[in-house]
Image 1 (cartoon, rainbow, N blue to C red):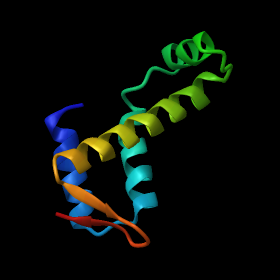
Image 2 (tube, helix red, strand yellow):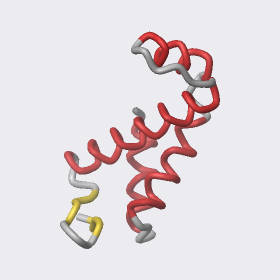
Image 3 (cartoon, helix red, strand yellow):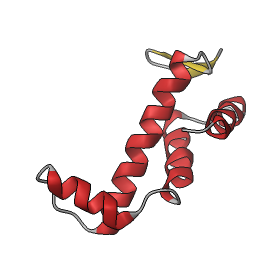
Image 4 (cartoon, rainbow, N blue to C red):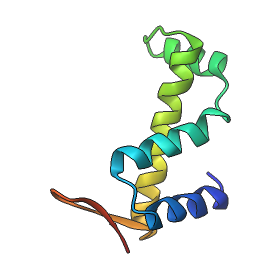
Length: 88
């Protein structure tokens, strides 16, 4: 992950997006960085066969989740039970 990813996350949080919208925006951002063929091979190596497009999407989703967790660690956002998240 790059510093620009954290800046992008901060911008999204400031816009007040829902958690679902946050994940989707981050997933779209990471899709361009994921090689579908390599992702497909990686998933196949752990016994999950899927097309390169689906593997690319799934890996981008995982990366989005990692960025959210890192954002939580760096206090860019916090998660609150029942109300999604809030800016810190």
